[in-house]
Length: 303
Image 1 (cartoon, rainbow, N blue to C red):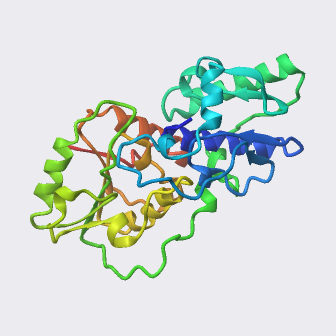
Image 2: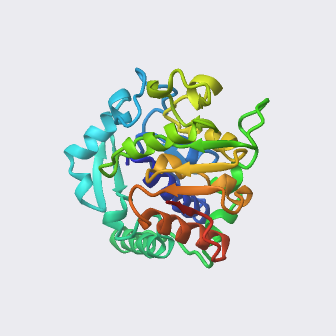
Image 3: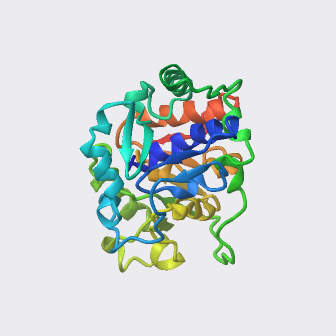
């Protein structure tokens, strides 16, 4: 996996599987996003966890180009992108690899009910094919975030300290370039220009288009929160965003890592920019409604 939204969503289920099968050691591989798997005692990365990129990561560019991608190359050479389960010899070990891409598990994007069915099916397939006795069950959707090691709970405390800025009248805008879908950034850039005429703005990453705009700050340049392979920066960003009056997100997973702040989000605080219609707003509202156990539709569409 190399798209952060998929990795973030998958980590909810992997956490449950590991917790329900504590006597089993599991391995995982993702290009980045290791912060989402921290503190799971029976889960280990199959490759080295990298602390930094080999060069500056440019907004919208593939992170795997700046990391050791030998495991990724191994998986692609063995056509793992096309199968759900495959037994492969990796180095000196025989390892059963499971592809958790939503297409192969037959579940919708950030769709909890179909994902539960998909993971149940893949666990059953592993048990039947290899004689395992792995458990996977979710009684209530909220179980995904009740576990103490879930993304929701383990990052509740602020990761960013000593923030002196008063952000009550500030608008936070995620300007990460989506990689999963073709996306025209011109409308969001126009919105940033228009809002910054008389409002304070914080952007999720630097853009030289706004270099001389005194009403715009950048998370990386002004707050020192830079891209990291672990994606800890995506959690830290929300420590600041949540303090802002309004938060505008885009249809890209780098904007969606807010579960640890879910209970702090205020009504009419988070908006999906209407660059792709209501599709992704509906997806995220269905997701958060399931986890909160209510039909609040926390996200609004920005027209």
